[in-house]
Image (cartoon, rainbow, N blue to C red; front, side, top):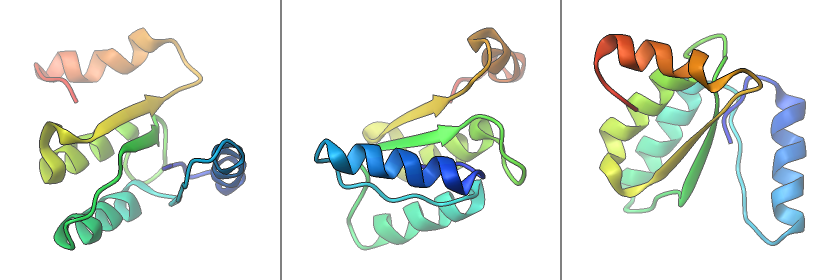
Length: 99
């Protein structure tokens, strides 16, 4: 889980653990990229990465692109937003690419 709101990260991790899913969280896009790189280098990976769309250091789109550059298409990345999805799609479409 990647979100710059620590309370949200802790709550989501607790919810996931209650249903038997081992979960970790970081509070920035840069931390997420660094953590994925560390795991990938040791031949480990995350099954799913949940990323908040709006964060202060790197937004969810940029974070997903950086993570995708490391892991390729083999890891599921889900961008979470409290906003209309069309808003999220604008930037990748403008650049002519998807996450």
